Amino acid sequence: MGIKALDYESLNENVKKVQYAVRGELYLRASELQKEGKKILAVEHSSNVCTNMQDVSLYDFLESTSVLGEHVVALCQAPFLLDDPNVGLLFPADAIARAKHYLSLTSGGLGAYSDSRGIPGIRKEVAEFIERRDGYPSDPELIFLTGGASKGVMQTLNCIIRGEGDGILVPVPQYPLYSATISLLGGSLVPYYLEETANWGLDINDLRQSVAQARMKGITVRAMVIINPGNPTGQCLSEANLREILTFCYQENLVLLGDEVYQQNVYQDERPFISSRKVLMDMGPPISKEVQLISFHTVSKGYWGECGQRGGYFEMTNIPPQTVDEIYKIESIALSPNVPAQIFMGLMVNPLKPGDISYEQFVRESQGILQSLRRRARIMTDGFNSCKNVVCNFTEGAMYSFPQIRLPPKAIEAAKKAGKVPDVFYCLKLLEATGISTVPGSGFGQKEGVFHLRTTILPAEEDMPAIMSSFKKFNDEFMEQYEDNLSHSRM
Image (cartoon, helix red, strand yellow):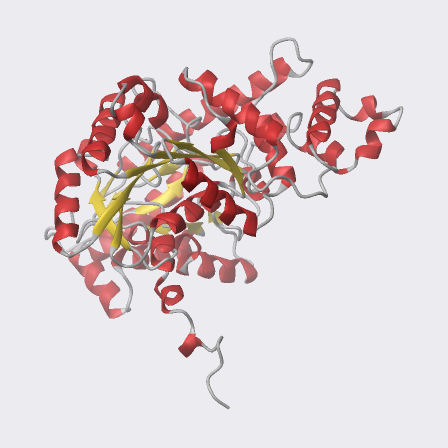
C-alpha cells in the first residue's frame, strides 16, 4: 500500500511547522505527573491538567458573573423554566428578564443557527459598548461575533496572508497564536522586539528596521499586530505610543490588528487602557480615514473568565465594503458562531445597571476580583525579584508575569547535554521539584541568550505567598547547584 493522505510523510508541511508552547512539552509532562498522583500547581491558565490553578474560570471568577452568565444562559437553554411559577425562587429577576430579552433576539432559541456574523441584536449591543468606551459611533454591520478572539485572529490572518512572501509584524515576546497561525497559513512572521529594560516598551525605530530587513528578504509586510495589554509581557501601551504606531501603519500602509482582549485587566493608574480605535479616531483625517484597523475582544478575560464559552468579536474600521462581503462569505462556511457564547458576549458588553436587583452584588464582586488581581500582580512581581538571578517587570495589565531567569553557564551546558532549550530545562526541573507548571519563554520568542518563563497571576491570593516561597526555594537551590561564579546569561 502506498502513502496515504493522513500519513505523517504526506501531511501539509505548514502543519508540521506549527509550534504552540502553551500546550507543549511542559503541559504534557504536567499531565503525566498528575496522572501519577503528583499535585500540580499550574500557574498557567492554559493548562487543564489540574483542579486548583489553571484556566481563568477555575479561580474566583464565576461567582461574580453567575447572575449575568450561567443563570441567563441556563434559562435560555431551558426556556420552559421561564414558565414555571417557582422560577423566581431559583433565579434573580434581572436574570429572568435578560433571558427573555436574549431569547427574543434569536430565531429559534439556542439550538438554531444565527446570522454568520452573529445575532444582530447582540452586535448592536457590542456597537453600543464600543461607542460608550471610545466616544465614537460603531456600526454593528462591521462587527462579527466569533468563537473566541483567537478564531477572529485566525480568520483575519487567513484573509491577509497570500503566501510565504507576505509578512506580519508581530511583537516578540508574543502569544504563540500569531506565530502558529502565520506558519499554518504559510506566511512569514516579521518580529519586532519589545525592550525589557524599558518595561517591554516599543521603539518605532526598531519597527522601521524590522520592516526594512524583511523587505530586503523580498517579504511584503502587510499587517502589524499589537497586544495591549501585553501577553506574555503584561505592559500597557501609552496613548503616545499608540499614536506613533498608527502613524507608522499609515506611513507604511499596514493593517493594524489590535489584540485588546485584556482591556479590563489593568493593575496601575499611570497607563489606563485606551483602545486603538479611540486613538485612531482622535487623530482625525487623513489617518483616521485611511488606516485599516481590526480590533479583537473576548469573554475569556476581564473578571468574566469564561474561557470555555469561546465568545469573542472583531470590529473592522476603514475596511472596504467588498472586503467585508468576502469576510462574511468566509464566515458563512462555518454557518454561525456559538449562540450561547454570543449571549455571554451580550451580557459582558451590556452589564447590570444601577437599579437592577443584582447590580450592587455585581459591582462589589467584579471590582473585588480586579483589586485582588492588582494585589496578586504585586505579590508575584516582588516574589520573583527576591529570587537569585531573577528579574521581573511589574505586571501592568493582562494576567501574566514574565520574569527573566539569568541562567549560569553550567545550567546552559547541562541543558544542552539533556537536549533541551535552557529555559525548558529550567521549567522542567521546576515542575518536577515543586509541581509548579509554567511555560518557557522560548515558546513566546525572546532575544538570543536571554531566558524567561511565563506564569499567570491567577492563583488565589491567599495561596500566592506559599507558591512564591516554593518557587524561591527551588530557584535559589538551582542557582547554587549550577553557579560557577562566572557571568550568567543576562540582557
